[in-house]
Image (tube, rainbow over all chains, first blue to last red; front, side, top):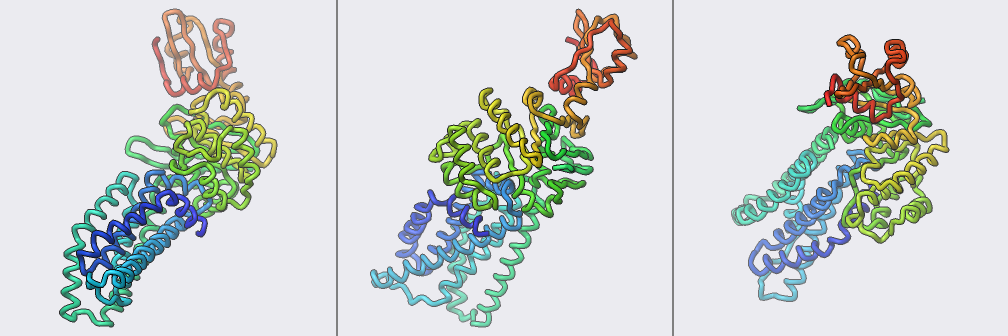
Length: 208
Length: 288
C-alpha cells in the first residue's frame, strides 16, 4: 500500500506547483468576496488535486501499468481512496490555515471565528464528491474518465453558490443541531464506505 | 510441468471471440504464439495477465490461479509489451524508483547493468524515448526482478534488426536457467525460427496447433507443382493453395500423405512459419 502512495507522489512530483497555484488562485478569488470562502478554497483545492492526480493516471494509461505490477486491483482502489482522503485533509486544512492567517493579517475583511464545523463541513462535502467520482472514474474508459473530470469541475462551479445559500439558510433558521450533524457525518461515512466497495466491484470486473 | 495452463478460455466481443482455448506453455522452454494481427493473441495474453476477464475458463500461471493469486504470480513474471505503460513525464530513474519497491527480488545492480547495455540514460524522460527504447526499458525492468516467466506481447515489432538480435540473445541467456520460461507473441515469425522451442498458432480465436517447432516442420509441407496435378479432390487436401498461370504452391499438414500422393511429380519443401501462417489464414484457393 505504501508503495502505491509513493508511486502517486512520484507521479505528482512535477505537478506540485499546480496544487499551490490552485490554493493561491482560489484564495485570492474567494476570500475577499465570499463569506463561505473557507469551504470553497478547501473544496476546490482538494478536488482540483484529486482531479489532477487522476488526470495524470489517465494520460499515462496508469491502470495498464499498475496491473503489470504485483498488486491486486483491490489495493489499487484502496490506495486511491487513501490518497483522496489525504488530498481532502490537505485542501481543507490548508484553507483553514490561510483563513486563520488572513483573519489576523487583514482584519478589515471581517472573517468570522472558525470552528471545528468549518473543517468538518468541507471534509464531508469532499467525501461525498469522492464517493460519486471514484466509481465513475474506475468504471469508465480513458475517454469517459476525462469527461467525468470536466463534468465534476463544471458542476462544482455551478452548484457552489446554491449550496452556500442553502447552508446559510439552514444555519440561520437553526435547522441543524448537534445530533443532526452527527447523523449527517455518519451518513457520509457510510456513503464513502459503500462507494469504496462499489468501486472495487466495478474495477475488478473491468477489462483493461 | 507447465508454466501456463489455459483451460477452455472464452471471451466474446461484438465482432470477435476467443473461443474455448486450452493451451499449455511448457516450463523451461520458449513458446512462440503466432497468428496474423487481430486473431486473439493479445487478448489471450491480456487474459493471462488479468487485464481482461474471461467470460469462462481458467488461467493458471506457475501453478497459481489467476486472478486469485495475482500478486504472487506477478512477483514471478516479467511483462514486455509493444505498448508503453510507463509515465511519459518521468525519467527512467524516477520510473525505477516507482517500480522497484513492488518487487521482493529487485536488483538495482542488474537494472543499471541493463541500462548500460541498452545505452539508456537514467536521466532521460520516458516521453523522449523511441518505441524501441521503451521496449528496451520494459525488458530491463522485466529482467531485473528474477522473473521466472517472461510474457512478451509483440516485443520485437518496434525494434531495429540489431537490437532484435541482441534481445533474442538475452532471452537465450535467460533460458540458461532451466526453471525459466518465455511466451512470445509475434507476427514476425523469423524471430521464432531462431529461438522458439514450441509454437502455438492461433487463428480466428482458436488454437490451430501447439507443438514443438521441429514437430511443426516435420508435419507441414509446402507442395509446388504444375496445375495439371490438381483436381477438386486434390485441392481439398490443402490447407491453403495459391495458383498462378505457371503452377501452384500449397500447404498440407500431412507431409507423408502428400509424399505418397504426389511422388516425384511435385516438389515438397519445409515451409517457414510465415508460410504456415499465410496459407492457414488465407485458406482455400488464392488465384494470383
